[in-house]
Length: 329
Ligand SMILES: NC(=O)c1ccc[n+]([C@@H]2O[C@H](COP(=O)([O-])OP(=O)(O)OC[C@H]3O[C@@H](n4cnc5c(N)ncnc54)[C@H](OP(=O)(O)O)[C@@H]3O)[C@@H](O)[C@H]2O)c1
Image (tube, rainbow, N blue to C red; front, side, top):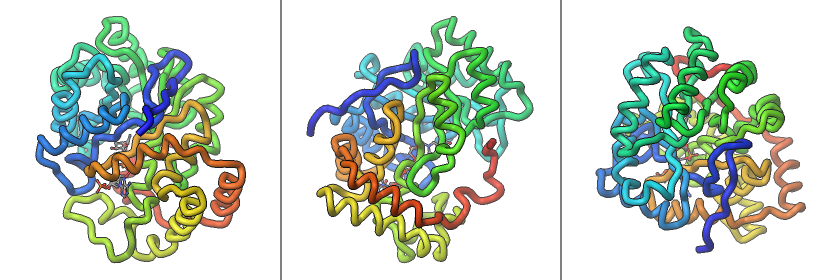
């Protein structure tokens, strides 16, 4: 496999492999909990294949995902960019947001320990906290940057007002939000704003939580605790309606000798030179499949086939169950 190309996140942000690796699903979110050695093996395989950008968060586990990442990457710490996130009360998603300055500082100290490092390369606010002014959040991260504990500031699922307010206090290197063929909302306001401000974009769930790979159908049963059991977009009716995305991807993939996952990722990479998707998988063969997406350049005719196809498909089903909301627009 060829080495992965690199991209820069933000005008002064980190240089990372064009595809990062999302570590969440190794032990959180999708009902799968790999044993530690197996999870570490996947992370190290990603590094061996050229990935230098790894994504985790305090809430994944909670806490244990950061520990895996820290242990897996300790031997190569200086060759990778570690991204983690703060912003939930006591590190638990269900308890709601908490980005009070003292909490951000506490998370930073605890994350540094779990990640076995002396600096967090990219520290994201996981969700906007409407109870804490964004200026206070950005100011706290700015102080952590001055202290050398954090290198770059990021936001996740923030709207344009929050992005501008944060960026005015401490330049934001990257926004991490959902973006894929079946969730193109960021194209409306977010991407133009990021382009104007020189902020990089990190699409999460770039494979549509696995759906866009074509490996999920109405016959698929997800393990207990898998978020897709309750996500409206994965209801039987929605899956059936959304199959049109997979059909399109499969057609394009066949035409260019690639897989649907590779086309889904190559399409994201083709949108802007400052986009770095972070697909996740628990499986080594799928890791290789996904990384092949960085070597795939979609030609003009394939891009046109995709835009025409997407123009006639409407995604069915909300991304998240109503009670998980917590997304600012
Ligand atoms: N900021 C946020 O709020 C937020 C939210 C969600 C996620 N994230 C981050 O984004 C990362 C990626 O997002 P994600 O994990 O939600 O979604 P994703 O990368 O779109 O999809 C992951 C799912 O797809 C399956 N998969 C991966 N590659 C595949 C392939 N080649 N063929 C078939 N199936 C494949 C995986 O299953 P297997 O393991 O069985 O392969 C897994 O269930 C996460 O790890 C996390 O770091 C951030």
